[in-house]
Length: 359
Image (cartoon, rainbow, N blue to C red):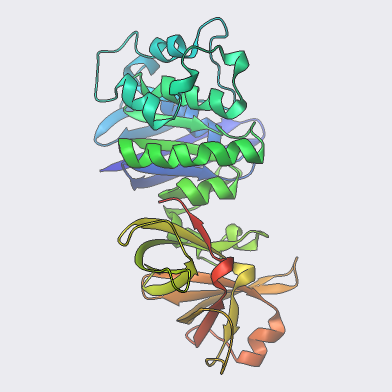
């Protein structure tokens, strides 16, 4: 199944022409700077904005096709909406706010008690919105959207108004949500940490155009995309736990066709997780060092080398059998190692520098 979007619309300062096709269900993250067209896509999918031309289809259901004269009104699209601000009714309790989403739909597969448990909001049911933290309000808003039995969940920067602490509080709930419900989710953000933890598919936008789209692990490891020029650039790999070595306090993960040792995880063998390997933490070598403290020496092949003139560095894209890594090094390092596309190379990575994210 797939989620297909094509939108063309002319604004006074921008001509928007966006098209992508990603797998469904799963979380598709629209990522890009402010003004790149992210919220416009969400509004078009919800039926709140009618573009000059568009075609939106999800899992075989056509929501809009301006050429064919198809335009389902918002109430027929069965889209759940979550915005930056929770938009809860202040005079209602949390429980009443949640049940408001159930008023106009027949009972479905998403049940009240399940959502309360999934989002951890049982202790909040009798409280009013003004007594909740920002993260708690957003969890309630997500629950209300889900209890409307949506076929598509649209989330427009739902964590943008939260500080880092509240964001860290709510991200694990969003990870549980996407795993448990198997809903197609369109998620807007310009925060790379949210995209890294939640995205299955990634759509990179800039000035109303699609820069690239595809699986998040593929795009995060490409040295030719804008992501690689960020300070927080890094590859993302989907891994499985292969071994927990309590004696060494290490866990061995397999992902991208390679093995990685990380500090001991509280996960069983076979469990899935994501790892993020920052480009600035990857050292390159042409041969194994004689003695070294780090645990990860990963063989690969140079795929691309791109200049980053702002940081006076280069980004080396390293191909693995089923994935890739990025390394930010100096131009001199590339010359000294004789690196060119196709060269064999070793990626040296400290276990403590690998960030373990959700599943």
